[in-house]
Image 1 (cartoon, helix red, strand yellow):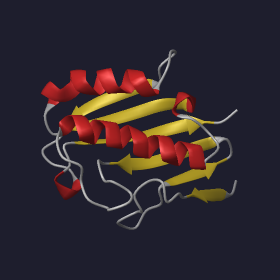
Image 2 (cartoon, rainbow, N blue to C red):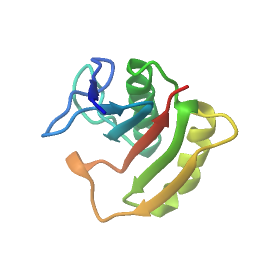
Image 3 (cartoon, rainbow, N blue to C red):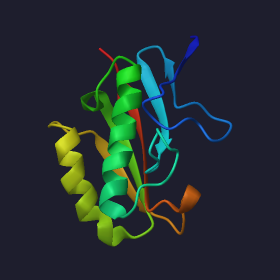
Image 4 (cartoon, helix red, strand yellow):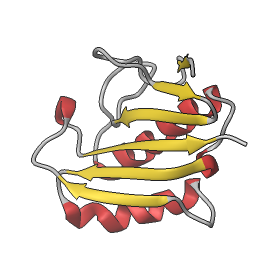
Length: 126
């Protein structure tokens, strides 16, 4: 199967040796998104704003793939403080509807650019 690179200016440009997303068949593998504002490439301030920005960035990449976040079958959340997990749940409910995707939440020591939260997803189209 061939790979199709998914890219959009509505989400932060890749800041390393990776693509925003890669589609193989009807599956889209989305790279992790942190709370970078795509217009400025600067981190938004505070955990709530970062969580929203992460989901906005994921949404933009999903749309570039011709999908929505409701096509997600797997979501991974990385937090530098697991006490913020309830805030992720609250925000996630605004971006996805039931049935929700499978999900993992992992506490990590640190994330790129001093981010407080990162998320990646796998979408299945169709």
